[in-house]
Image (cartoon, rainbow, N blue to C red):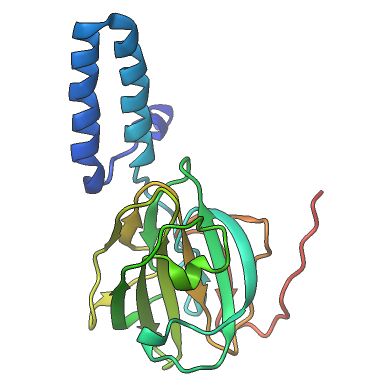
Length: 230
């Protein structure tokens, strides 16, 4: 049963119409030319795989900040949060997580808290792996206030082939660490801006799992970590 459940992962509602369209196209291809139908079947299975939405086991201790996305921690550096969030002009530790087309694209809240602000900005669709994507690409920004009054920001950034950002939370909503709040279609990036007094607990190059990997701890005084390939 466990093995079966690991294969039959639920699909995010955003994927229903895409999977249905791929399936209909596959039937047409089988009717027109059978070898193309098998290609369509593979693409349909990939589409269902892309929109998978597995459950996650999230640590729930107060102060933990969880990864909002599956993917590779691409960069960790100080950066000023998007101006539209009104979080000031001072640089904060920023953790950027890059999702490729094979990663789960459902995004999850990194913390328990209250949504102070959300803002959508249209923009370009350059490679999300580039640093300038944080400012130039289409993005959805969210500021969340923790129980102790500190704030963090989560920014969903469209990528080279991403064409839709989904964000299901609004100002005033209560969010819980590890809970789903949106997704980005077809390759993208998520930035997390920590409070100035928080240190990252991940390193560049490390893989993160949305809702499970602890990327920072608001209660910790630990210095930023270093990583080695072993």
